[in-house]
Length: 232
Image (cartoon, rainbow, N blue to C red; front, top):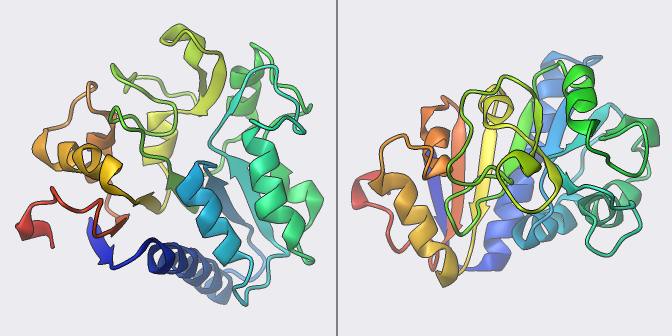
């Protein structure tokens, strides 16, 4: 695990974008004709990162983009759609991006059986996933108590939440080649601290990220208040 702390939100977002761009560049240096598979979240910090990412000098033509989660029954045009946030702030801004490389569903509207369909169609490992950290210690929409046992790529949150959405599973997150999480602001400080204070626990799903050999945690100073000094 690597932890990097930045003075401001702005420098944090820029650093996150550069981390992604470097990963893509290095991949294509060694694997020119192999797709780079990027899974994105669409919370505030990831949206701000994407706005910086589109300014990076990268050939995005062979980039394949996946979504970490989306509400059931939501159109891609809905104001709360994660798909809309990612396309509006990222893929639509890239002139070299191939629209056919945008993967999430065979239709714009997710239904109850979309999780199993997506799991079948998403067999390859993500090269990089940006994980959303939730205030309750969840990752993407894997909330406590998290299902660490499922081997499906995507799961339906109806199994453990009142809300209906499809989320990438903890297993799929951990199978990615690289994981990056971004957190900013004082309101996220205790969430970040809990990741370090607790052992692996389904009640603090973010603790599973520490098991990954290439996990990068990017923070601003406000979010890093409770990170133990030995990690800094």
